[in-house]
Image (cartoon, rainbow, N blue to C red):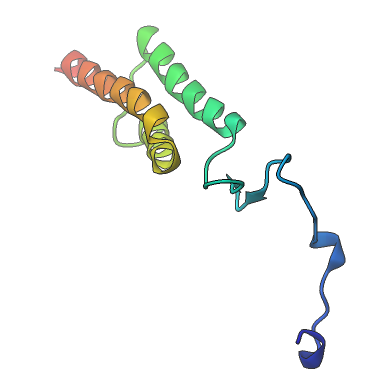
Length: 105
């Protein structure tokens, strides 16, 4: 069908993998069910930790823009695929938000 319409497959983009290797499509692992890689999950945990460390040092954190909404977005993305791992991170961000609001009053 490709050749009929003048198209040619790009063989360098084709790859055959086994179930032993992680199969990724659009940055999601799709072997059994869609999910984020361990490295991506680690980056999300790290961003939450860095945000907490910045607040502990006394830096002013904006809740409307910057790292807080970015971290919350990453945790929400994690929740789509790994809800059990996202709940504690989301709770940590919500508690940080409460602390920021009480500190600014």
